[in-house]
Length: 306
Image 1 (tube, rainbow, N blue to C red):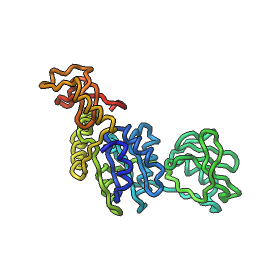
Image 2: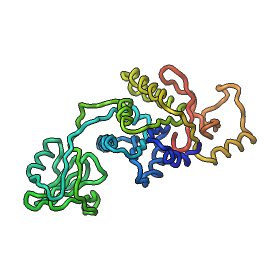
Image 3: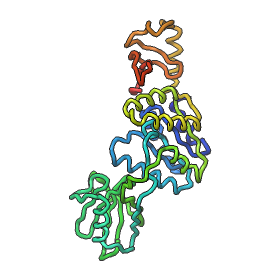
Image 4: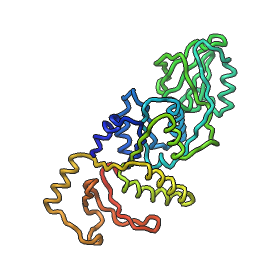
């Protein structure tokens, strides 16, 4: 299957999907092509570099557990090996309902929110007269609470770039703490997801993922057994799918096979820097043999740094 066909494949899949991509580049492409599909819940568990990103996607997962909509989770191997929280305290703010400004500020401070002059990142808040700006752990944008006496008179989303309000809302649910103590692995998360929906699991280019698994184990030797057991469980319940980048790659492979390409009889004949052809993934540059966990692997660099 070609990479460009994967978003359509996921949309047409009648069940919810957990799709384990073989590269962050692939996952980003799928996400961008699916983001406008309002009939599905879409979550990306890759490129979780910052702590704030982790909590944002964690609370997206919590929301998805309450929903009956079709769910598509796009995850990298790193996202697969990450643990997630299944609980958090929720603060609901509703237009016209009273929660004293002082009480709101005390609650935010108690749960680790930092007061700043301007709100610029998650878990920050600011106070200006009757206005309280908050960037909660969940959601894409910060919220602005405007008081009239002890009642909430106006709730809006606002931009961190120009600090201007752009959308009125009547109600917002805020996850207000990190709840680090209650973590589960991805297998248990899948069990929770499957409680109220049928869920298919796809493993993209398992050979590449197996290689990346060994890299992950090298980085976390003390968790080797745990990582291997988790991945083996995922493999047992997954459907494997082979993905190549484009039709152009296929044509390039065919043309190279009928020109000056060499069929090697022995790996030692290949030199570092040679262009080589993988029957599924196309043309790449040979980087030599790399040892991971006591085993030798052939390293090939493809486009997009795969």
